[in-house]
Length: 89
Image (cartoon, rainbow, N blue to C red; front, side, top):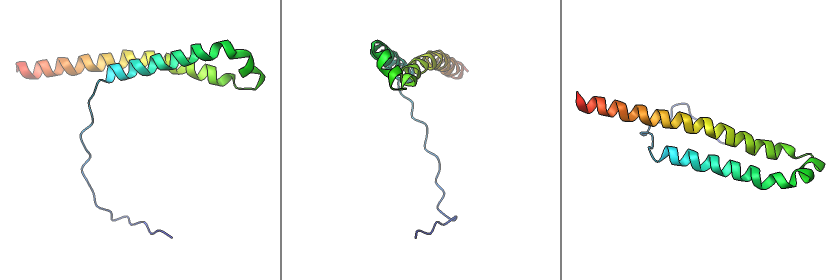
């Protein structure tokens, strides 16, 4: 049986990774929408087997991805504005 110690070593949190966030979210959104479109012709089969939630999950993923794209584009613009303000000061 494993013994867990509450006195484990504390480490500083690493810096967050910054990458092509807008491209990543856009790619994921496109993927969700493509999955929705691919499954749509088989709606009858999904309905017969009680799996229509698979189709609607893909559509919800695409919809939430659109909100995500809007959010990360605004975040990216705010980060660039803040960097420009900092450089100008």
